[in-house]
Image (cartoon, rainbow, N blue to C red; front, side, top):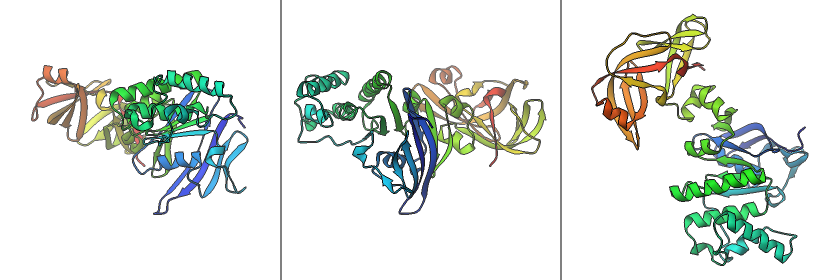
Length: 363
């Protein structure tokens, strides 16, 4: 058994029905961030609350090294304050009657007055709050309050930091500022973080590891590269934002190349399978190139004729929805859309490399 690892194997039953049943472990001997990602209602926040001791599982075990935080069979359940955990959520409540210095110093025990002062000042410096120690929470901006809340939690040096969408209410500048501070802490203190976020870009900015959670079950876990390049299930592909998850079947095989029947088209992809086997073709929208005209298909590239149904602007990018005999969504830059003079009703060619199509077996 690893002395510096968190082991989780729990079963939590919701009062209105449904169940959270998960099992995983996280090594704590190096800086790392594990992101719990999935749709709303999948049990992400409840999982964090079970780790923190705010919620109690029905059965199972939560263990840090040799110490059981929760063990149903031993009737053991450590109080939140006895777990080496810091939990920060979106509306983390600072003590309104204490100034920021006293809020930050609240969890510091066993230190002299001078040591407490020096410890608090170091956190004020890290989080850009120097000079605001005597202010009260209602005298700070939203971003400053959230930085103060994170400083309060980290000052007690938790072994594990749990983040439950704490940055979602902040503006972009405040969010980026807090991201930078958190990365500094993770690197300098060799911190371990478990984060719940609905923001995919935020998840990718932090994650060393993803745990994909849906309907109370872990669907897949691994590095961001593993999850995004090789989703294990069509549902995982959709959860991580792969816009095109297309049902079809394997038409024929030749070595490690497959020909897929998708809608009225045939697509060449790399992978393994058997003819007539039902499958899904997962294609990221940004992997699709759009061209004007018609061209013959090659073994390395699929060229599919289609008609543009709709163009949706997303800042510097545009989502182009196409009818290719099956629905296809491409993501290109606004400049490319202007250069091609794209408009609804226009004929278009979607070009997709065989290597960009990930073939998933049908459940």
